[in-house]
Every structure is written in C-alpha cells, then in structure tokens.
Amino acid sequence: MEEKKNTDENNYFEAIVKKTKTGITLPKELREVLFESDSEIYFKLVVPKEKNQIILNIISKDIAEETLNKKTNNEPIKKVKKNKLKNLNVREPKWAEYFVYDFENRDKVQSILESAYYKFAKTPVNFDDAIGRIKYTLISFLSPTKTENAKLYYSVIRFLIDVIQNFKQYNLIEWIYEKVIPNIDSKFLYELALLDLIEVSYKIKNVEKVEILIKEVLESIDKYNKSEWYNIMSSLNQLVKKIKNYETPINILNLIKNKLIKYENEADVDDYKIQIIELLEILKFIEDAYRLADNLLKSLPPESIKLAEIRKIRNRLKEKPL
Image 1 (cartoon, helix red, strand yellow):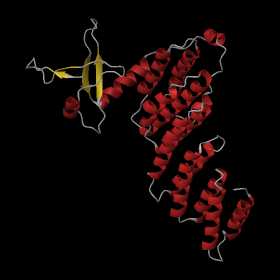
Image 2 (cartoon, helix red, strand yellow):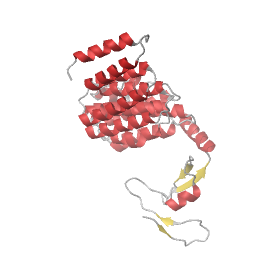
Image 3 (cartoon, one colour):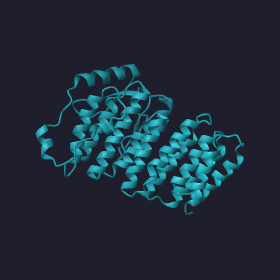
C-alpha cells in the first residue's frame, strides 16, 4: 500500500511503501512517468554506513555493464574447499550435462554454481544462501547479447533441475518457471527449458504442472509462422519424445493429439504429414493415425514416391489394437 505525501517542495515525488514478502514495489504512477514499459532500466544501489537509507540512482546501460564487468573481473570467486566436498556423501555435479551450449564466462559461472550445489547438499539446507548464489550468477554474468544470456539461463536451469532431483528441492520447479524461463529470449532454448521442466515434473508426479507446461509449449509452437514448418515439426517431435515414456492423463494427451491433427490438416508437405501420423502412433492414437494415413494415401497421385511408405504405415497401424 502506498500513500503519497507531498511534504517537501524540492522532491518530485514522495510516498510511503511497505516491504512485502516479494520485495519492494515502486508506485505505479511513478513507474509510468519515469520508465518506458519496453525499455531496460539500470540503477546503482547505494546503502550508507548508517544503513538508514536505500538510494537508487538511474544510470545508463553502458555504465551498468562497465561496472558489472569490472566487478566480475576484479572480485575473486570463492571456491568450496575440497576437503569439505569429500565429506559430503553426494553425487558430483554433471557439468557436461548442464553446459550444453558454450557461453562467455562459463568457468566463472561453473565455480559459483559448484559452491551453490554443495550448499543445497547440506542438511539442513541454507536455502537463502544457496539460491542467493544462483541469483548472483544470473545477474553478474549477463552480457549485451541475447543469445549469450539465453545460453546462461538454460545452463542454470539444467543445473537446478539436477539439484531438484538430487536433493529433493521441489520448490525450485516453480522458481525456475517464474524467475528464469521468462527471461530466455530464444524460442529454441525457451522450449527446451520448458521440456526439461516437464520431465522433472513427471518424475515427481506433479501432473498439474506438467499440464501447464505442455500447454505453454503448444502455445509457443502456435506462434511460429506457417513458413517455419521445420521448426514446428522439430518442436512437436521434441515434445512427443519427452513425454512418450511417462504415464500421461488422457486430457493432456488429447491436447497434444488435437494439435497434431490440426497441423496435419495444415501441412502441405507429405513428409510432415507422415511425421505427424507417426507421432500419433507413438502416443497410441492408432485410430486417428490410421484415418489420417488412409486419407493421405487416397489423396496421393499414382506416381507419388510416397505411396509405398504410406501403405506400409497404414498396414502397420491396421495390425495394432485400437
């Protein structure tokens, strides 16, 4: 709750704000005046020795990046002592699985993530300390390049998913979903992150979150232009591959089935239609797959080189139980 108080004529704006569990929010009327909605704003935060003020100075992006780079390069990264690591009976981090795509400052990021990993491993866990290291990583190693940042975010997500599985930190699923994934400015890595979160949600039997994530993947696929059929098919294949080995409620499967049938009707390339039929087969929608295969076979001209392949698929489907 904010309460305006225009007591000092030298001040442009005054208000009383309350710190909540989620932090401190600047009043909406001030944000609308000072900030453009689609622009990035940087601040220099200063707290005097007396600790009785919080000062936010608006600075340019260039100054912010220069300051962050100096801080990153000059500050020694605290390493976890090896003897302490040996005393912990935990699995070691699997760095090759986290860093699927290389990016700038990877070694520094790994060092901080390693310290966070063993913080999560302790019992009882000091969650604020561990997650604080993750937050530091996500802020301090951002670059001016969206692609580099997307690879950083994705690597941290894969790291945290391993933390979830190894140390049963299930609350991190929601933290990743709300705090990290929305920042990924790469459609490809954004969808991969959602798919990875789907898999870990399956493993802990969080079906409600699985449904939310699958819907979000399908919405992302819908945003492709119809000229991007390669990307559409790649995303559909990735989704089916991710869920095929898990027991999925029929309502969620029907969401995917209906989307596959929609794309099969819209596809103008026989290879894509065949791929979709096979995806329906993988999901055990045999009747729908057979119907689409039969319709495709009837629509092909006699000279089509796809006739033999479609007949083989249709005959295979005919032998399967519905």
